[in-house]
Length: 168
Ligand SMILES: Cc1cc2nc3c(=O)[nH]c(=O)nc-3n(C[C@H](O)[C@H](O)[C@H](O)COP(=O)(O)O)c2cc1C
Image 1 (cartoon, protein in one colour):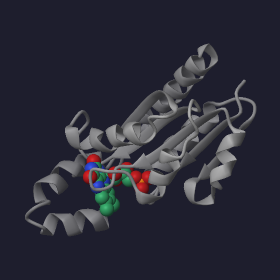
Image 2 (image 1 turned 120 degrees about the horizontal axis):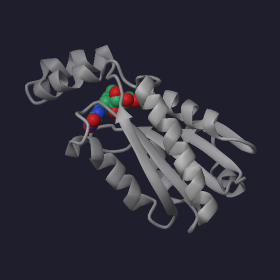
Image 3 (image 1 turned 180 degrees about the vertical axis):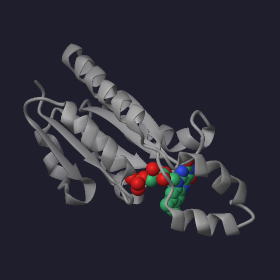
């Protein structure tokens, strides 16, 4: 069983729900920590790392950039994200694509993403901006996510990654 870390950034709790679901699926030697509590050298202690973040302005939150860039070569990682855009849209994928580039030295075993409720405060601001109004209307339907199915999918994702980690 690999020594496994789940680390994440989450401002309104959506990504944390996914992180918790992944963590609960892991057996044995495991830890879970928000990225702001993680010392960069701690990463060395783990053979498999799940790293999660919300999509912010088509990209990843700043605290994640350094972590992803500095993942040691060949370290096994899996990425997960939550987003407010419609599933499958370019907007929902951009940040994950960028994370793959940043962490390209690592052995990326897979990724998972699902919608996450956009905070009412953020939606209120966005709805008033002509540039973001349509996006805000689209994001309203994320309000029930992550839901039970998303959490079940996150657990399946974790089991799948564990299977891959055992083979590689
Ligand atoms: C400032 C801000 C910017 C965001 N930018 C995007 C975006 O570009 N694309 C997107 O799909 N969702 C965007 N979202 C929605 C979040 O990614 C989504 O609500 C996410 O689930 C929040 O995760 P958290 O609860 O873990 O913080 C944004 C939300 C905020 C507050």
